[in-house]
Amino acid sequence: MLTMLAVSTVAMPKAHAANIITFDENANACGGAVMCSTGGTLGYSGTDPFNLSTITSWFQIDTDGVSHLPGQPVEPNKDAGAFRVINNTGITVTTFSLTLTDTFTSSTASVHPCSVGGGICDNFQVNKGAAAPNGAAEGLSGPDFVSCTQGSAGGGFPCFSTAGSAAADFRPNQLTFNWTGLSIAPNAVFDISFASWDNSAFAVPGPIVGSGLPGIILASVGLLGWWRRRQYSA
Image (tube, rainbow, N blue to C red):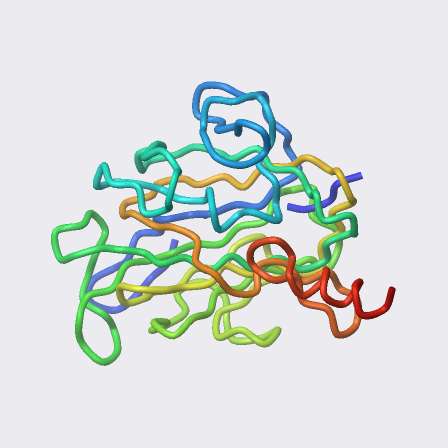
């Protein structure tokens, strides 16, 4: 059974939590703000859940009317929604990381001066759902991390929490949402939802899923590392 899966305060001025991603157990019905796929991959108006293994080909949130992923439609457009997803990896997923390239400018809603080092920052929040197992945690990291506004350093991340949410300021470009201590069974269907999203973001290649098995990291598209290991051990 799937177990899974928002503000912040910063000096001058206060940063309001926005750009929230929640990883949760609720397998909402397709339609409305719940995006489903065509054949488990591209498209937002289908009736199938998206395949977790191909997340870098379909996960994006648009505010500029331009698709950032080849072959993927422009929708959804900012604000709030959810992707219905299936764990098609064949293994129980215990950790999950989603790296996004995000775009914002000084005119983007919720942007504010960075509290450290100058420049502009926006606030991002990572949540886990109420069905998360005991000990599950959430964290934020990435090369453009500036400061933790909810939570503290821990768990290998500069911003970390076991309380259900963590939030941090980032400069434009890239950030990683992290969830640990999960237990997502093979073929479990769940949601990756977003809310209060103010800027365009899209998934980028990199480690997307950690299986929890020693020495195995599932690569971003096609679970390359896992398949190679299977081939070598066959």
